[in-house]
Length: 278
Image (tube, rainbow, N blue to C red; front, top):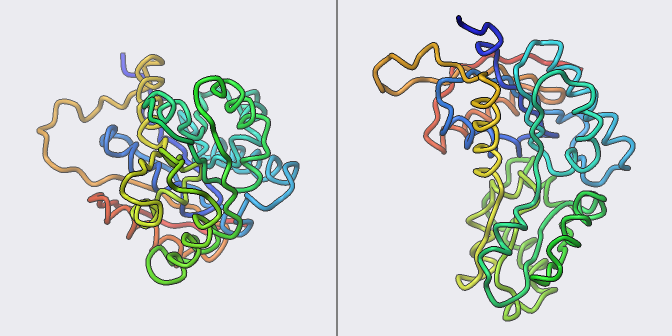
C-alpha cells in the first residue's frame, strides 16, 4: 500500500541562500523528491545574533514548514542547528536532520597538522560545537576560525571577486598555514565560495564540508522510515526537473533568482514557485 506521507515534500531552511548548497546535494541523490525551501533573509545572518533569538527564529521557521506539510525537515544552517535542533526535534512528528561541521571526516583523514573550522561566531560558541571539539581533541588539534561578516558578503551574491579575496586573505593571514592540514567549512554559506577558500588556503590544505554527509543521512532516514517517494521509480532514467517551492522572508524575487542560479550552477533545473512570507 502506498504511503501518502511519502509523497510530501522535504522541507529545508536556512537564514538565507547558504542552505541551497545542502539542497543541491540532497537533490543529486534524491532526484525524485519534491522540496520546500525557506530562506529567512529578513533576519539574516543568524551567526551574529544572540542564541535565544536564533532559537526563536529557527523554531518559527520549523513551525512554518510543518504547517505546509512536509515529511522531513533539514535545518541547513550550522548556527540554527547549534541553537535549536533539540527543541525542533521535540516539537516535530517527522524526522529532523541538522548540520554539523565535518570535523569527524577531517580527523579521520589522519593528516599531520591542525584542523581549522571556519564558522560564524555563534556556531563556534555553541555547546554542540564545543562538545564536538572535546570528543576529538585527543586525536587532532582543532582550531576555531571565526568569520564575522562573511555570510553577509555571500548573501549579497558576492561569491566571486575582490571583496571575497580580500576577506579570505585577511582571515588566513591570522594563521600559520604551514601548520594547517585541513579546513572545515562550518557554515553552509561558505560552501558556495569553496573554490575561493581553496585558493586562499593553498593547494596543500584540504577543504572539507559536511553537505554530502547530510544528504546521505537524509536518504538513510527516509529509507529506514519508508518515506522515500517511489512513485517515479518505474520511469525511465531520463533527466527530471525538480519541483521546489521557495518561501522567502526578505527580498523574495532577488533571493529566488539567486537560489535558482546556484542550483543551475550545480546542473539542477528546478520548476519552482515563489511566495513571500513575513
